[in-house]
Image 1 (cartoon, rainbow, N blue to C red):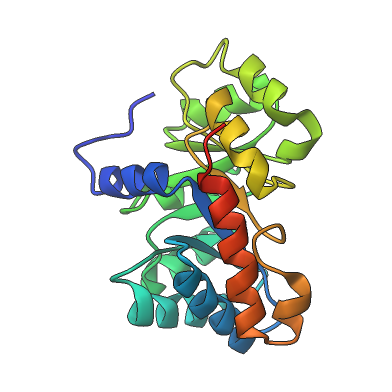
Image 2 (cartoon, rainbow, N blue to C red):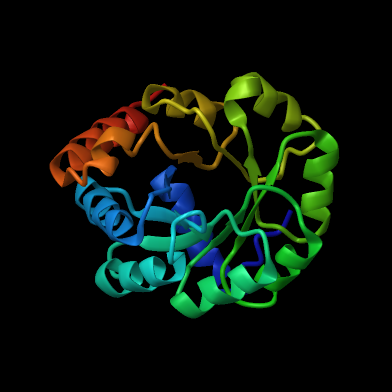
Amino acid sequence: MSTHPERPDHDVLERIRADRVIATLRAPDADLALIAVEALVEAGATSIEVTYTVPDAGRVIAEAVHRYGDRALVGAGTLTTPEQVAGARDAGAAFFVSPGFDADVVAAIRAGDGPAIIGAYTATEVQQVVANGVELVKLFPASIGGPALLRALRGPFPDVAFVPTGGIRGDAVAEWIAAGAVAVGAGSELISSEALRGGDRGALVAHARAYLAAAAAPA
């Protein structure tokens, strides 16, 4: 599978590989989401996915890019319509994530800059996603199959770049990387739900730092 080195996407893909962890941010409102972004950047997270389940997600992305774009990649997630893709692109998103395959959504992402990270779980789904030029396959929900599922899928798809997401602990990241992942996605495991609801920036920073430290440890 080509990562299209002639496209600006290439630098983003290499950055995600180096970061190893994409922080997947869900929040009950835009203000709490921005507090979480600030905490994640302070903790050292440099690939941050703002999901479209966050109210006014486009504003959150635009503000996060304005504040932290020199220190972090800010992407958009849970994209399920081409209109959301367009809004995320206008807001300055650096990468685009969808939980599953939709041809119109993938086409909208591929029409502009920024790599697509599209959800798949079975061999059939992976094959369909890759056939549509997707750069990264979001293996979701990863915790159900575990690293053994990824190792099995890499048999027929040795060149596919997988990003397992869902239920991945910090101390398990190295095992996933060893199994062939280029990075992992982490949501509530990385972003404390309790601290987020309370807007406790200090607790968010501490929780994220602990996760990222565990994620950086060798297998």
